[in-house]
Amino acid sequence: MKKIIASSLLAFFAFGFIVNPTYAILDDKKKNQETKILEYLNFDWWKKKNDPHLEKYIVTAINNNHDIKSAALKVEQARLNVTMTRAGQLPTLSVGASPFLVKMPQTTSTMGSFALPIIAQYELDLFGKNWDKAKSSKKMLEGAEYQAQASDISIISHVGSIYYNIVKLDKIINIQEDLVKDREEIYRLMKLSNEEGIVSTSDLILSEKQFVMSQNDLIDYKKARENSLNALAVLIGDSPNNIAEYERISLDELSNEIIIPNEVDSEIIINRPDYKSIEKQIEAAGLDIRAAKKEFLPSINILGALAFVATSMASSMSFENALGLIGSSVNLPIFTGFKRTANLKLNKNKYEQLVKQYQKTNLVAIQEVNDSLYNLKSDNEKLVNNNKVLNIQKQDYKYSQMKFDEGIISKLDLLQQKESLLYMQKLAANSKIDCYVGLINLYKATGAKI
Image (cartoon, rainbow, N blue to C red):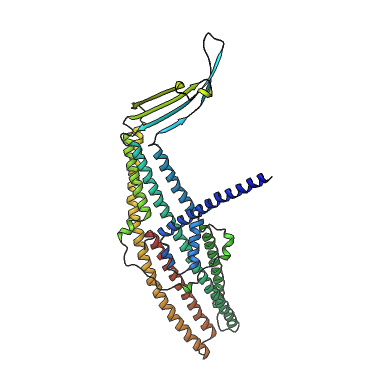
């Protein structure tokens, strides 16, 4: 019994010492991967927004977004392909066991024996064909890594854009609720005035129509916010059932000072991850063409074999029972049904496609940078103008309140002035978020290098 308990405790401690470090290694690996992603995502740029809620959603997306995980798996797939390709440069070694039963002619007896063959084979890469294939797979790995970076930047940009649109909708819904109350009060006053014969029935109908339309607009804004929250939940890998718990900053806390670069260095464009990914794919395609050409050259193989044949296990590994072989062969396929020719043309075609895609990527990158930079400057100018008009409207509403207090204007006139103020607040809110989304578009267009 004591031996059983001692063995159980030993196994327990052994299991603990083996498993716990394994989890620690996995946690460290995950942490290192997260740090690497945060680095090429330029997470410091996001931290300058001083919004801990947005930072939390970005980190959560990095860890839980399924597209980011899928991109990481594609990189791992490319890495395994490098390992497989490099294996083609190494010799192969196999060991087997072959039991058999022998009956000789003119005899009635049988004899049992078995063999232990050991076979080594190596293709001498005299022309560098396998070396080119290995280098090509490495270039494809680098291309996959850059493609994953481009995908991650796009996803995180989407997270930021949706987040700021939710912030905008929060503000607009608050304004729209005030607008609904305002138009409801206007309709009530118009109805009283109509009953007294002061306003026409058509004006009453118009005010009722505006009141109902404002209610519909509020419903649309709330629906848009719900859809945006659901989209954010999917992006961060969370259930949409939890959207009621999502915290965010208030639009009024966002700064109106938008820092816009005057120009973007061309070096930033050619260092975009999608741009670099195509470059690596073109380099890999060039190596594939070289390897395809070398398929027309002979292959040189070295073969070595060692086998032990015996009638009993006790004597199987003796030198007397050994059978050895070493040799080489040179093979040059004469006719393969035009397979090698088609393979060469196929690789050339792939190379030309990648060159065209590279040229398109270059043009699209320039277009995206120019568009995002121009749009951002235009949106910022619009924001400045809308804020000026908003301040004027605030002053106008303030004077209207003074006139109302002095009995110069009616409450209906005051409510109409307030409606204009609420409308300008909505325009200013839209302009501010347009600038923040524009900054994110520039961030994405520059490959997170702003």
